[in-house]
Image 1 (cartoon, helix red, strand yellow):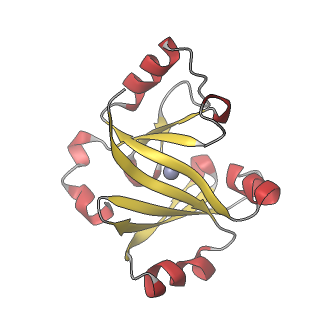
Image 2 (cartoon, helix red, strand yellow):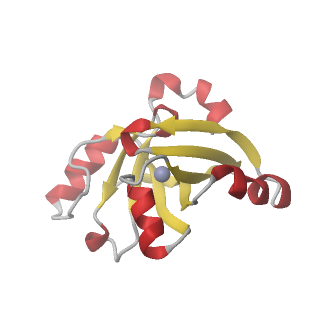
Length: 145
Ligand code: ZN
């Protein structure tokens, strides 16, 4: 496992516009943009904080995993994402160790990333994401990292 750092912390919110001023105005984090990720039925607002980011997640449908998380536990910290060189490589290596994955193959995340979630049963209930930034886009990424 070659984790390079904490890529971001995902926070589930009911409404981006209501939640953003705290991060933008009160904490003074740099706002990077809003993006919709249809595959996960979320709208995502990104803020940079040092080498890491804060990812606010707003559900766009009641079927969104984020809607379900808010229903169960309310708004708050949803997952921790580690940056890795290769999401698919880490999936293979974790599975070889018997670690249960939510995503058996890497899928598309915000900002052109490839992501995969580890099953909370395998990570002490801390929802854990692996996040790979595509190499070809690494230069452009400064606007989104
Ligand atoms: Zn995330």
